[in-house]
Length: 97
Image (cartoon, rainbow, N blue to C red; front, side, top):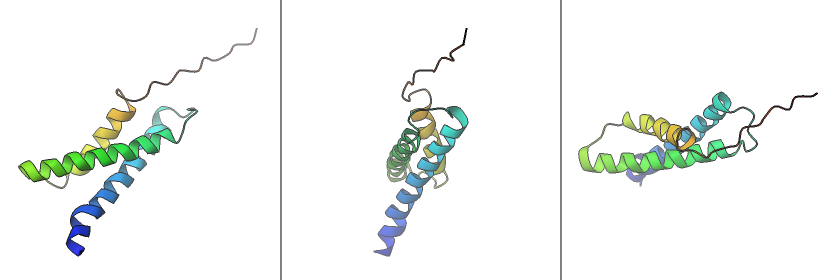
């Protein structure tokens, strides 16, 4: 039981929480005036989960190192919230006459 916890659940929890944290940081640095602030940590959480799955496949196939997991998490969150992320309409500033 300890082996399963150490091999699977602990890295999964760490990757998901690091993804949510990275998503929150992305929100603070890129779009501070967004109407949907919860979207950033949720997409970060899903990006962390996806990066964990990719890392597991790479570990089983080619023996990827452990330090690759945080790099994959940051790259996944950046992709999901950056170029491949949701398109949000930009607010236009209203000028008073």
